[in-house]
Image 1 (cartoon, each protein chain N blue to C red):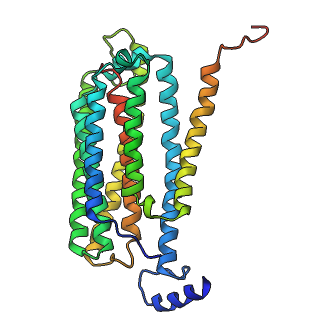
Image 2 (cartoon, rainbow over the protein chains, first blue to last red; image 1 turned 90 degrees about the horizontal axis):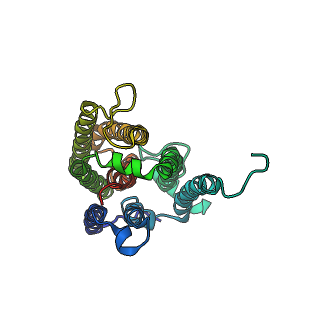
Image 3 (cartoon, one colour; image 1 turned 45 degrees about the vertical axis):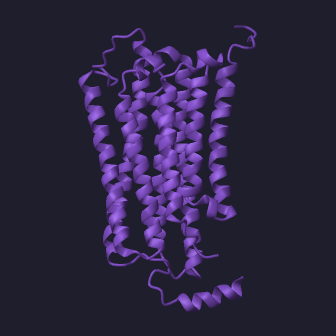
Length: 105
Length: 224
């Protein structure tokens, strides 16, 4: 397997997508999406969704993961997995505090 | 495929960039990429801790964080996002130039990446200057006019910790890129061997991704 050379055109397309994503994020931040959709955290969901999409584009194309072997993909996913564990286990504590009464307190 | 591997190794033993503990240039390249990604996995956790703290404190004081975020300059933040994305493009093009053996273009794109990275740090320095001037830096001299001074101080503690750590990564990245210029000019990197450029590119793009998340979480949460 020789090194895959990504055509320059792909880089320019990804660059354009990232710029459009940034513009969309800024535009969406000035609109009260919670009032429009009725979902309280809608602004956060939209901005983090766009950020995640941008990150995936950078990882797949700028960082060549789309063209790399499975070992690389596994390493990237394990990094994301452990981050997800960090967030979910921490929040499972903070979010549920006070939900159940503690005897003697 | 040990047989084929050794055959290629013999053919490549003359390559000055092949370390003796690798059989082939390809094995060396795959090890380099894998090692860099392992490092980046630890970096995810390094920044991940800060993102986790941000999440907990913001959950505790949503209105305070929105109020504090409102005092950041969206124009400067958005400009910096565009500058950093452009620097990722020039970095990707530097890797392309190395893979296709364009010696002078490698140097040109490395210099472009360093310049854009420096513009980012310059804008960041201007923003930090404003914050010091406005007494929005946490500590004894912190002053807040709004309704949530405590949450605002927590927000700015996180702002300086997260953007500061990010800026430190940028400075390290710029130093590494500077070190790559001379060997690139001397023709050390080409289609057969370009691991240092590729690995530095991975690091640079990772720092870009961190900013892609920092920008909305710090600058855009109090706008609507």
